[in-house]
Length: 262
Length: 270
Ligand SMILES: Nc1ncnc2c1ncn2[C@@H]1O[C@H](COP(=O)(O)OP(=O)(O)OP(=O)(O)O)[C@@H](O)[C@H]1O
Ligand SMILES: [Mg+2]
Image (cartoon, each protein chain N blue to C red):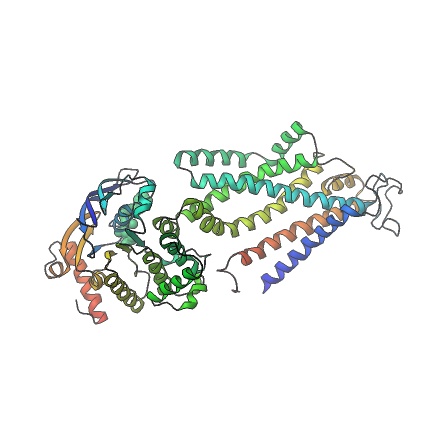
């Protein structure tokens, strides 16, 4: 059975607009799926629905099964058991993903304390190990978010998500706010960590070139609908509809500019 | 650097009034109700700042006024912070329906004139220091609640709260670890400003004769009593006015300085 199964997921707003429309996909243990589409196509809402985090005004229907447990409409209590351990999220905006008034070490410590029951010296050691795993120097533990770079903030956010050793990491455009070289480093880090921990990835981006760096299977979203699903290779070789073709063309342009190998 | 100067000036001004208020608890040049001085004496060796029209020592009355100003400021801010903070926190976390109700209620309360509210409280409880504190504190709590509600909602919308939820952190822990620390800097600055407004509101109440009764009268009452003799004995009107300005400007400067101290993202800049 798949780790994550989404079938016929539909999200609509209070005023009746359909924001995500009949979406279905699944992610097996240790597998990776890219969710791609232009801005406003419903990528973030899909990840939020999967994590059971949809904002109050939105209504969702269909089914989302995380490790066999239904997420939509589930009480907070049963979601809490899934969150962190089964699925963790890295958010799009590194500037709001971290508490501006809390030292980074403290923020990384929080999930370690909760999920691994660590205290005192053991906790401190685990925080440093977590930071090292995402290639952050130990001094970052004492820094506030505004005192480190955007890439370092995103690494800290990844360290927090990994602290619970989730089976599935949901990353919502984790590199969009970063400049290109830093972006490549963070992608390589995610790729390495997912392999090392045999972690499944649901990776969101509006950029096919970026998705291509970490996943081999993609769902192409347009206006809340899946217009294309399949292996990245075949999407690249035969984009099909005009929307996907445009995404592929822009990805090739970007990749050429970066001297990449799509 | 300029902000440093503001902060230090604010601390000095506020400390000055606080010190006077404290000293008045143990010592005043004359007893509060002492009317042995001549009427409307000018400043002199015996009565440092002169006397009022009943022969009471002006310096004594000013010192007691400082005590009342500080008591009203602290009392009203404490009441406003606790009542308003709790109501705001509740509204910030509430679901749509309760939140809308609370928000509408707060808007009505805020639109209600403070002075009118104060008169109602005084009519119900009689004019006293406690009445003034209750009236001003109630009016303040509506303003504090509205601010707290918005601040809480803003923090709750942040990804780090969502991230905390996704890693299974409990709500009470989210409130103490994330919400309170993040709303506190803005709230503290606002409360300091509210302190100044409370002192002014009490002065207006006393000016209208609705404040604590003599002989323990506030600066507002002193201003009102000195009004008729302002041309012949100007000290009686100028002195309480100056003290009001000193305290209110002091807390405003302090509030501005606090903003930087409370917020690590602003520390060390400028
Ligand atoms: N809370 C909400 N209430 C109503 N509509 C919303 C809400 N959140 C998002 N939307 C709408 O849903 C649509 C999809 O939003 P979503 O955030 O999923 O886009 P996205 O694909 O993540 O875009 P981006 O690449 O810019 O992050 C948008 O049209 C957006 O305006
Ligand atoms: Mg998004």
